[in-house]
Image (cartoon, rainbow, N blue to C red; front, side, top):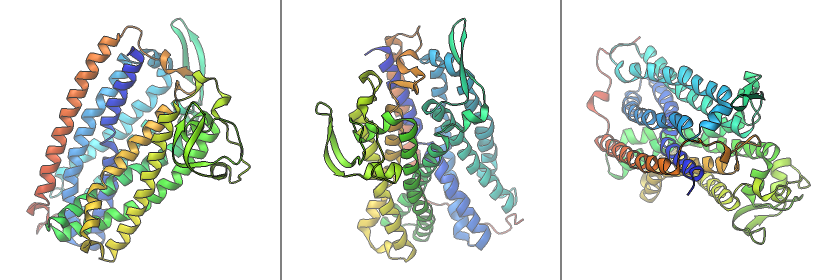
Length: 449
């Protein structure tokens, strides 16, 4: 394999491993705000116990998220130096903002969140919880801004320099609020909320199956289901908006996502299938006219086909089609799980159905898989461009890095990331199996105001 393919694999590996943690911290941050808010509102000690237990889990996730994310920023300089030189004036700003406005906010208040229970007032501790959750969301905002600019660049011009062309920012807000930012951000946040919610639900279901910490588990699951129910429908709505945006600004990606080769109205929506690239058609189950209607609310809406672009400018069709459709299928399954489980939980009928509890234990995997598939769809569907219709991926790699260098670091990073993931799972397993501690109960004499 050449240096371009190896560099793409390495970056995909590091991002894939890292992206396991941020959605959990974002979603769990929201859950913590709800749990501690309920404690302040009701005074019910069960919510205090919930918050203290899940804060410790949050701290573990945050630590591994930071450790796995640092490598990616170095890769821009090592593997993707040509890209960094071309877009550094634009791409560097949101990355710097992420560190200043998100990481420091989140990490600064995390100390109060973890260690301030008996040292600061309830209201101040709740404020710290809100700030940590806000910092986690800010992190998503700036990273999505940077990536969205690569998808739909705006607010820039290209100038010639002694070392080659360079994109320079002309409007900060046009670059930040480029055509895909808000749609992609809302879709990403909904996915993160689902990841955190189903994580909480999964642990609660595990405790009930083991007949441990029953009150704790039921209360955790009810809060988790509230978030899951809202986020699952939010994911459907934001996913639709994202698809409409893609049809307007990245039509070749939409054509690959649905396997559309010929420009047409009354275009069919594929439910499941396989792209026969030789015959240029999808073999599977389709709903006639539905794709046109979804993107234009009219079956007469025209959908551009892949044949409008030269083959060298088309994204990989099969993998884009499959990752997109598996993501959608998981999303629909999560809606069913969230609403069926939520209704049963809030009517106290869920806890007698062991088969459903087993399903919910393993449901923690579904949002993570869907998030990875969504990211793969967005990035693979943008190819062959690293910056859409502005810079090709093949032109973005470092000129001085050899395939052997990348292969060696790829193997090394894989071993390190696998080891880190194993350590994370072991530590998480220990914390979950131990359950809430006696210290998690409110203490007499705790600071009250």
